[in-house]
Length: 319
Image (spheres, rainbow, N blue to C red):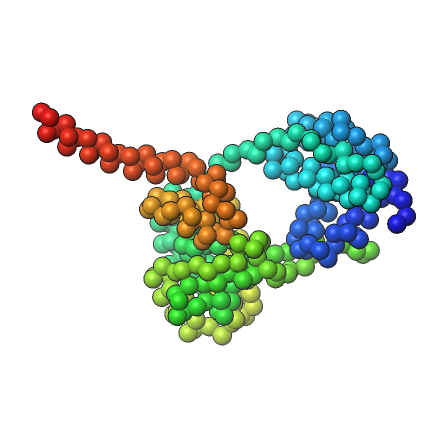
């Protein structure tokens, strides 16, 4: 392999030769974006051999303190940088990966954005009233916790009416295409986000009935579709969702709040964490525990009140 003196030259080689075709298109787009926005402006012209552990640690701190990036973005950027430099070390371009043993900021606890019970009721009522058949997608997300891309990729062949369940087998996303010409994007249907994201989700009876009714009325292969029968693009579904919130008189939250709302309600009604984790498609239950720790604590407090009632009976006996 021809030696690549600068970090920028090696990064381009790594992206085109080592990574492209081995990761999902959406992941490749994320790598490209992080490299363009954060890595290349700082190290593009820097010789690979001039990069050391001190520079890496200072860069990590600058991303957080000066650029004001979130902990998640800092960690993603530094992990990408480490992947590139690890490969450079393995190929003999540098002696070792200078990102080894770099201290990264701790993962921040983000407030889960979910709708209240009252807001959820208003959204559901607006969805039921709506003449737009795509409003059913909002109800699906509220009561199954599926992601936006999973909703847009959901086909009737993925609805198992015998088991009264839906099977998540694909996701729809828009990715950036990189080449010699102008920047372009393309809508792609791909396998789910992770191995655990491919899952079977049982349906509540009311949702099963709504889907059964719609399946008899449509000729489209997609559960949520345009009037032409074509699949709904994620951006279009977000617009439908935003309009529904306005009609319901509910303050705007990101589409992903529907997924968080499902998980929050599940905790409130006493569904165990492992079941919630499986339905959401998390890699493990610890992710679910961390993300919904506040809701779980509130549920535990509510459950512990039962012990007060138990002790009150004991106190009455003593008196």
